[in-house]
Image (cartoon, rainbow, N blue to C red):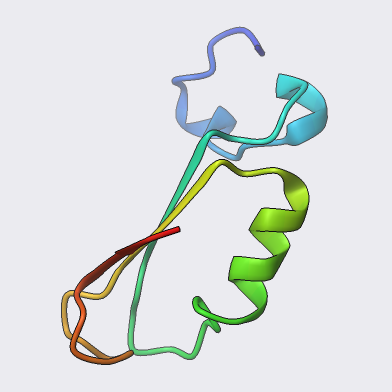
Length: 69
C-alpha cells in the first residue's frame, strides 16, 4: 500500500501499487452514458474485483436503484 494513501493525490487506485484488484468498486450513475451494466461489469470481473455495486439514484438504468454483483 502506498504511503499516505488517504491524501487527495493518492485517491486513484492503481493495481500495480496496491498489488491486487480492489475488493469493492462502487459506481454512481450520472446522466452521462457509462455502460455500468455492460462493459464495466465485464471489465471489473476480468480484473478480479470481488464486488461491483451500481447505485442509480435517479433510476436511469431501470427501476432498481442498487445492484450488487
